[in-house]
Image: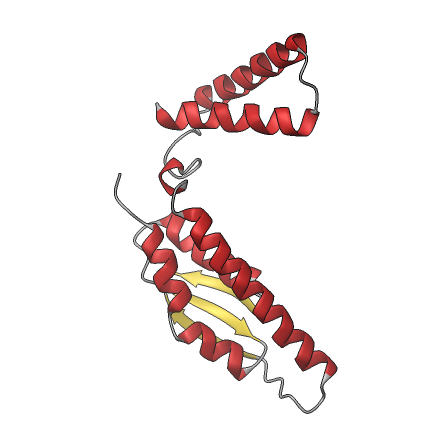
Length: 158
């Protein structure tokens, strides 16, 4: 039930922010259209723990802040490697073990790797990810397991 309510509220708040219209009639029509969308999603049976992870609402923003910092640092590193010919570029494929227990955690981990400049998740085979790295430094950063630990920390039973 809370996934349904959270989805409806998220849709409505997004509609309000994007429309910029706050007259009563339009707000009511927006609420009706959001309710119809939630009804369609329920009928399609796509509202569940993984499609709308309400349980991550409290802890996910802290992870996003950390990920944004990592993305910025990786951007700086890749830019330096492009502009300075003396910094080594050593493209390579390697495997990383994922410790996440469910598909949502694995998807977040794979997407986080791909969002970070200099690394791309190429393939997922069970608990192993095939990753392409631009340099030894980006490979070493990923192999420390910090990102994996943080994503695994997002998982919690509800």
